[in-house]
Length: 173
Figure 1 (spheres, helix red, strand yellow):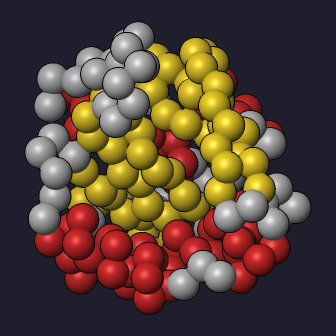
Figure 2: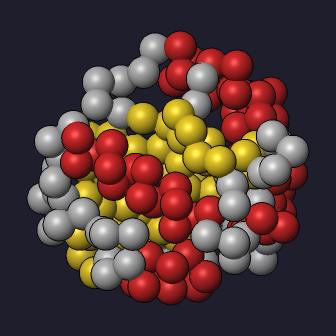
């Protein structure tokens, strides 16, 4: 079983690595190859270091470590960022390396985020997921997420279709 703990600034590089690798594993065939090859561990690490050095109010980042202490997944959450969605909180990100999937890490990261949101007084939540990411869609639906909105974003010359899933009450995972 993985150890789930709050992330620290020293975890920024490991989170950046997991972020880039998991995107390449997950979105190959969904996003243009050029988008995935342009991803930079250094840039993602800097982004995460900034977030961890100066966390936004009521936000949290968690990491999942394997038995050797290597970061194999991460999750982040906090207050809702999409004003048109009527949910207090938001699950911002949840990524687990493919080799570490199907061992309960995603479920445990969801629980950590739900507990944090609840303790912060954010009793409902939503998230955005890429519509063509069937595995993630099934994962969130298993936890009772209900599709509540869709959006299409034009990014780097392609259109990204996303679905918002919502929970009026935080999922018990």
